[in-house]
Image (cartoon, rainbow, N blue to C red; front, side):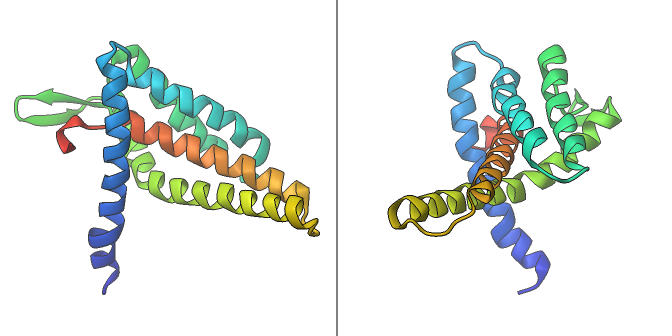
Length: 168
């Protein structure tokens, strides 16, 4: 199986499956007259706080800024992706928002998977520490938990913002 086949058969399907679940959540939220961007921000801003205090990567704050910036753009304008409908086509109105959204859409599945892994790993290590009095570094558990929560919350924000009722 080539890398392209893997992406089309596995990666894209998994990403779409997760997007469908977030779309169901977002649809219920919007049926109550609320904005998806408000819900997205409720995940994205705490994700940024966890990320600022935990992730030791100088590029991660740029990612967090893009993510939360698109929530703010969406809250202000009702559209986060920098495009506008023009008949049967969508045209790019704001290239920075358009490309930021495309970049974040590519990053959401790896971030989601890494977040699940780190939070799960921390849970197992904490259980091992409490149940077996094992020699586990509690600082690593704290750091993995904060990183994992940041990745999960940030990827959730992206999925919510890009939810699409047409795929249900």
